Length: 100
Image (cartoon, rainbow, N blue to C red; front, side):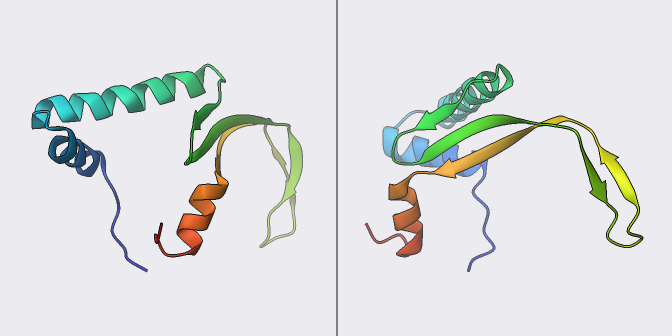
């Protein structure tokens, strides 16, 4: 597996090459899309991207946890967590090494 990470700049460069917008316009477009997604998640909405997956927010209740080193019980406070569920198409594509 590769250690490469896809960045905002990589996305902006791909938009620049494939759509033909200037580099600044491409960066602004990528930033705008990510901002819309973030804002929706902050509002508690799901973000579903067809053939890719769904980002959603879950509220986790308070519970008792355990420190694995000491065995001591520790309270874990309630929190909101972000989860991602890939679509079946994305799962298949990743499983088959991007052939498709």
